[in-house]
Structure formats: structure tokens, C-alpha cells
Image 1 (cartoon, rainbow, N blue to C red):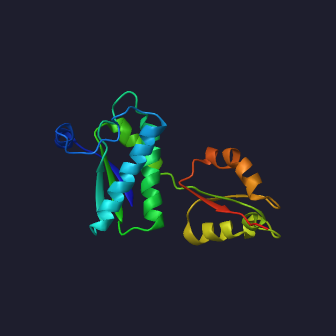
Image 2: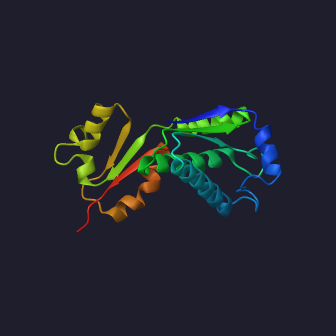
Image 3: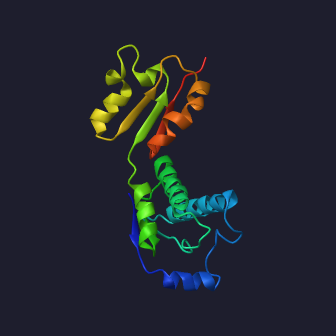
Length: 183
């Protein structure tokens, strides 16, 4: 489970200012900043897991700086936690802690995404009977999760990649299942 809470982080900020924390933001923002944030979150998750922890609190400090986009920060941090929890993890709960209510809402919006887009070829589409008989439809009925079928008969993986921006990104999914064959 992933959640977000509003909290007073003044004690944590004092430790950071005293040099007691790793800071991902030291060299400004931009692509390298978000890469460092992703790496720092991944390291925190691996460290917690290596210690046998089941729950982790991740304080998000200095998120109010004007050069940090809270939506992008939320996307990066939440996606790294989801990736880690999906691949393999002993962790069962990760909580983000933020001071600002607007930033808490930005994280909540990303965390509450539940759509799963299935991008693929005829097998995803549901050939020969149609989408209502596809494995995507079966999963939707069996799990109650929101799976979106973006399968197209006869497509190659290159064609799927070409329509990724059009068919996947507007849905803002939490996850993507990509299923394509090769010859």
C-alpha cells in the first residue's frame, strides 16, 4: 500500500541542515535532479528491505522550493515505489510525508491512479472474437481493476511504440502491460 500524509518535518529538516541526510537536490533541478531523486528513493527502499522492514516512512523535504514541480516529483517518487513493490519487496506499506497540503494532494492524485493500460497486438485485442472476450476483459471481470484494452490486430512492437503517446499517455495509467510478439 502506498499513502501520503501531511506532517511537521521540522525535526527532519534540522537533521538535514546539520548534514545528517543525503540530499538529492544539491545541484539544482532538471533531468539529473529527478534521476537523483529516483535513485535516492530506490536506495531508501532497498535499505528498508535489507533490514527486514515491512513499512517505510519517506519524508519529502525541500519540496516547496520554487524550482521543483510537485506533480513531477510525485510521479517520479510514486513510480519508483510502485516499481519496487511490483518487482519484489518485503515491504507492504510506504508512506510519503509532506508538510504542504497542496503537495499532499499532488501525491494523492498520483497514488490514486488505478488504471492499467494493456498495449499489444491481436492477442491483447481479443482476436478472433473481439475485445469483450480478450484476456484484458477477463482480468477486468476477475479483479475489478480498471484495465484498458489498447490492442490492435496485426501490429508489430514498433507500431505499438509509435502509438504509445497517443494511446497510453492520455490515460495516465498507474501501470502498463505491454504484450507484443516477435518473429
